[in-house]
Length: 209
Image: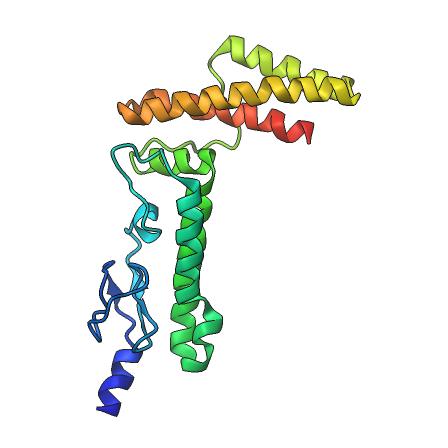
């Protein structure tokens, strides 16, 4: 029995997400293969979606994410697979915990903000943005970006910058709403165009800060 338990604890095969532990059959705190009842931990398939890793709905619109729920689920997931919890269980378990914790961190960073979330969803459709500075084909928007960046560089006074930020925040919120609508359809070409637009508004936001 001791040897059998030891073998289960060293489980390193890739497992699918489940609500019960494959070793002891007890309910898992999350859908991750990390059981603090029998101290068995496993890998997660590279193909598992970020939404599933953090137990947030991916439908009907995968872009629409409750960020408060996402944060709660992230913290709960890290409580079960943080490497510090597994360091006393053996080197192999600690390494598995590091990999699993890293996957959880990556999933959270991907879904937390609109830009990486949209990029992730477009990459799944083979339509991700590869360029560091993607071309903004909307000439009117491009002109607005250039004028705004020049205004930031030449108008250091606080009141002007606050006004620019207020206007830019409105543009960002409008574009995020358009992004959500595009993924709802889904219209991935429109989603890609809106993402590029959002990337430029985000650069303005960072330029103000």
